[in-house]
Amino acid sequence: MRKIDSIIIHCSATPEGRDVSAATIRQWHKAKGWNDIGYHFIIRLDGTVEQGRPVEQPGAHCTGHNQKSIGVCYIGGVAADGKTPKDTRTDAQKASLLVLVKQLQAAHRILSSHIYGHREFANKACPSFDVQAWKQEVQL
Picture 1: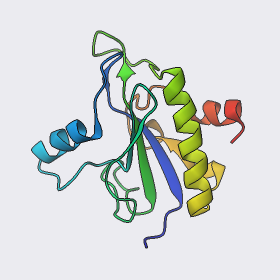
Picture 2: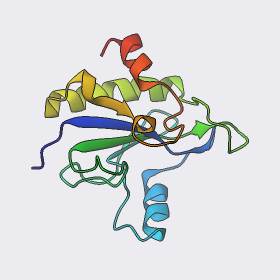
Picture 3: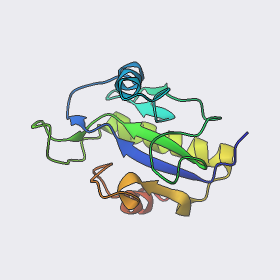
């Protein structure tokens, strides 16, 4: 098993209200020439958590941080116009994200200080919300 020390949260950058499955994202990523979906977990609009790439394998979700991290992606992240960054997480997604992060922390002994938003490593709006403020809000 690889050494995992962090969780990086992403959004799919799809318009709010448009649900997308892990299978669809896998197709998008394979069309780019990747061997699999880049994320380990996908959180659908209804809060369903879908498995992406196996956790045992490094992800393809954050340049320079894939070897030791788990990539979690919620569906959404942009307004209905398809361009403007927006926190579109549904209540169900928020609840599932919290449960999943806590489970991953426990399973891999990940410190709360090692939970990040993608934008902390890249010049992007992803995941369209402040993960550090969220951690304080939910008391991680």
